[in-house]
Length: 299
Length: 311
Image (tube, rainbow over all chains, first blue to last red; front, side):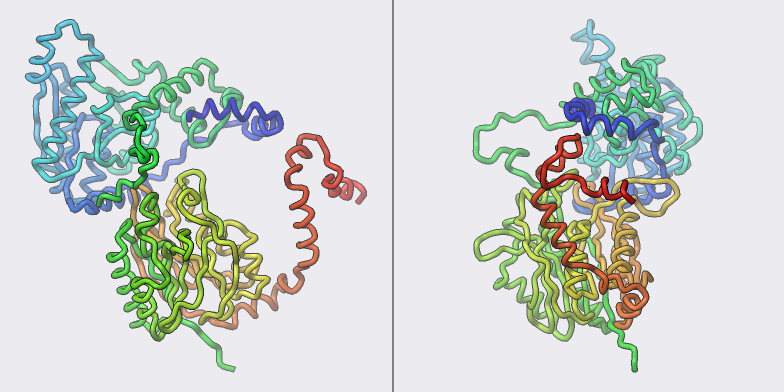
């Protein structure tokens, strides 16, 4: 449940509510410890891949900082030869994105493929020419997903995810598209933490410093589309989710009310993207409700 | 008089979830290694036989005390002592998160985890039954209590064991890494445990033998860092963070005495007072919430506030 709802529950108990509000006047900054994150996340990749009897991963490289970071972590964990980086440009993709992906490939020393998705996207939308850019963007993300999964089968590899905690919480990603993966080393790291880790891992500076973009249409940037900056929203999410600040506490630390409201709604409204599809219960034992096993059960 | 030492081995392994046979082989390997180094007591992590996030697998991986797996563990303990974490199935089909103590071929003591964490990422009470006693037994280290992971986060358990005469607290653990701070080579949970172990060791004048696991289950990593802290607060053994490891240390049986001469806290402990106050608190606990909001209850008024003002 999003923190904002917890806040309402807490506020119903005046005693607890008053005390909590006076306890926090400022919101602490998000801790980053790149050497420790590097150690934990490379161990995670190594462990989760080998556990299922494999040695390799495939990762889609967009030219952005998240996929660059995932790729470098995997190369360090598994050896560069065990990471296949796949570039999947569309005809409107920025040439800079492709150049940046090449920088990452060179830096990581991993084998790579370039697969232009223009023919399959254009063939489909020739039948639906009125489709808006959101539909087109989502379709591209899902085509890329099918390519990654196909190559994971071809190469006996797992698909390595690149979604960070900020976009997962905000629902700022395509369900079954870029959000799909077998394992995701960045899913518990805010964008701010990814930047710090990327720098530590030696992701080229022009990639770390550029404006984040899904590059689904020309000139798109995440921050313009979202209407707020990552550093700002990361601070809010960290206090809201990790530290469980109440709504009143968030306002007291100086976050504007519309910002808190909007981000709370984004988190709540995107909960469906973080869950399996809803299953109608009819039996005694229903998957994920009263049939409960770790994913590791199957390995 | 000669100083007596006891050699203790900590086996920091990565069990495979639900794979009892594989994990028993890991344990056997650990015992062989400890035996080769003449360890007298060998300690494994919590649920070393099964892995941690078992969920619905609990009933299928549980060991019966009269079963072949327990017999195998018993035979491994010939000539030494062994503490191993497993799911134990009782006669009446309850499942406990237990630590089994074997001595020279026999199972002689079982601690059933008393505090089953069921919050945050933990879900133990959904699947497991709660133990109901904290007792001491005699091990190579002298009078010893086993407290499993979360048990030790409740100071009452260590307090009870210490007053019951324990000179050693053995804590098998499956502690997940979580929380990142700047500038440290380990996570916040590891740091908290290290603080806790050191405080207990010195406060109660006991050895704290803490054995954690490593590896990942569904993305949750376990931080390792197993350690032995002496009653005077020295770290006698320390295993690596986040990696499998095996460490041994020689424990001087003189140390509890040394610390208790220096700080006779247990001697001075007023059990009558503790019991009296705990009984009062037990009577009043349900009313405390009201008291804090300004409503008072006849039996349970905050006498301490008035007492402080008078002074």
